[in-house]
Image (cartoon, rainbow, N blue to C red):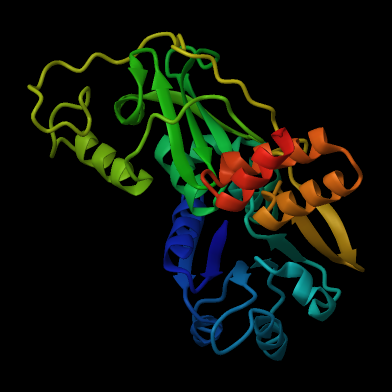
Length: 334
């Protein structure tokens, strides 16, 4: 497929993008912190695609377009930014140039890269095979997403054997047929699985049962898989005696997960026009705190207190314990 430059000054996001893109068949992803780092490599190692943040130190990501033109290079680009609207008027009309607003669904980016770089037959191959439970968790948390991650059996791909919930970039809950919590994630991460699916969430009624940081759990799972740490059944409890690991069977949730999928949740690649030939990749970005508060304020001003309260309740899922939201909700409830 080809070489992909990932230009992003935030190390954890850059590394997550490089890792995810590098798992696509035939893709070699190379992470860079600055535009100039990419410019220095252009002639010696010409890329097949460039993914770049717009707001970078020293030089803007858009500067890469001029550098490509100066060398007569026609390279597709994906512009990513948390403040895309501020750059909209500066983004030129250009074939092969698309924009992606942060936070974004990593599946949308992976599908676009596969579509641009892969041979026609490979475009039909599912991307789920490229990512495992750990990769989905990492990318969901790095992207501050609110999602459910479903894990399916290696023996029967339609059998659901586990479920994770990520709220606002935090691993909120994990469950398999043996129970819930951090150990459930570790069990799922240490057995062969048939596939993983990721769906956007608006809210969940499931209580939190994982309080360990997601990156510590991923590192723990890696040590369990390579045999450097014993006892996957008891996960983080080093004092428990080791015993034969019993993989989970068919999934029987101890408590049902109730959620409402987002209308604009993950799905096939959607291109929305910006101006001319420049497009925005739509992947279901999460509303900000300001969005929720603005919606609540507008509803209350219109006398729709129930609607205003609904906005605040959705905000409390992603921003638990926020004093302004809690006091406002208490006032509306009377």
